[in-house]
Amino acid sequence: MIEQLYQHFLKHPFVCTDTRDIQTNSIFFALKGANFDGNKFAEQALNSGSVIAVIDDPEYKKDERFFLVKDVLTALQDLANHHRKQLSIPVIGITGSNGKTTSKELVNSVLSKKHKVLATKGNLNNHIGVPLTLLSITKEHEMAIIEMGANHQGEIAQLCAIAEPDFGIITNIGKAHLEGFGGIEGVKKGKSEIYRYLQDKKGKVFVHGDDEILAELAFNNDKITYGTKKLYDIVGAIVNTGTEFISFQWATRYTASSLKNAPVVATQLVGIYNYHNLLCAACVGNYFKVEDELINQALAEYTPSNNRSQLQKTANNTLILDYYNANPTSMTAAIENFANLKQENKVAILGDMLELGEESQKEHKAIIQLLKQKNIQALLVGPLFCNAGNGSTFQLFANSDDANTYLQSNPIKSATILVKGSRGIKLEKVLNTL
Image (cartoon, rainbow, N blue to C red; front, side):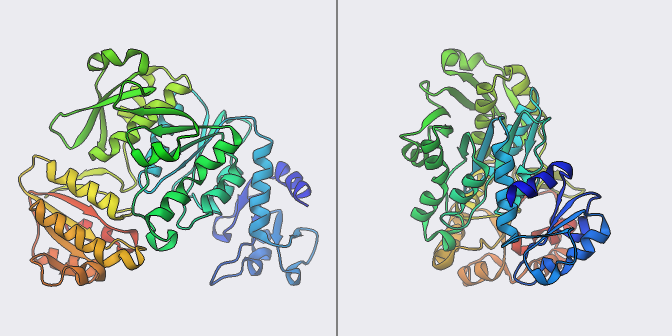
């Protein structure tokens, strides 16, 4: 069945799952969700330009253009895996609690200086996005970077089984999706599934050696290391320039003694916590024989535009935008970095951290305590912060609309403002007011 479907794919190598984005001569996969049944839109997809519609409800099969399978999602994943098996290019899998999208983009920027690279677009990193990414790899590509996201144990293992990576990266393991993973130990077990997969496959992993958790989890893996110690394959150091942006130096293990004489790479990324993501990209580039000068050029040129570690100047303020997502680990790192900035007038606008389960109250209280310790003026947005911050001196808002209304009447000017929270809080609503 999959081989037959793959023959269709070879003739029509464009896959669509949404009738609003149909491409001519594409294959439409009629996926189902909690509130929709793609089978109902199969005929519409064919009328809009698709040549094959993959369905799993025989009621909708009207002619040979309708390709009937047992389950559409499984068929999509099996087709992607079959396509992967035909490829001889290296595939790099990236996961982690924080920084995986930024790391993916940095690695892509570096490797693209020398190779034709296919990398996950946007946030297509789940059980649907990974297959779609794999199916977009063509014979022109020389390597692929596949981002893998998860909020439950077993998901990374499933994505590895589909993508079959040769190399793996875990950016870090932190307090993200605690509710789904079942606590921090569950996060460790879930994220490290890529290490276990590559250990069995005899693949390689790129490991941040300074991270004790990652170093322990990757103990039995074949690994390439990066960090601050001379014994690592890539050694780096932060250069303090007094600006919001990170500058750093790096060298190989064999030239570590001359690290202080290595070129300073001035990046356009905000947040010291991104240093390890940058060093990881340098490590991957070095392993794949990208010249040092091209690595440095790629890292210096990369400009974030996805509301992750992004600096934006408005008519009134300087904004540090990091509101694509948030969890206790990334929130703590952002606040500590913000506290160390030399600017005098600083304000944090923070939104709730979601999917923390029974740890939610404790973790939001810990963030509030950290803000007090760092003496940071803050506006806290969302019901979780409102509950945890009740009785505190911080300004609390039930939602971003209320916060925006307040800011319109009480504008902030000439300040450096950190904007960070979970995507569901919609902190983008306050940007035009800032």
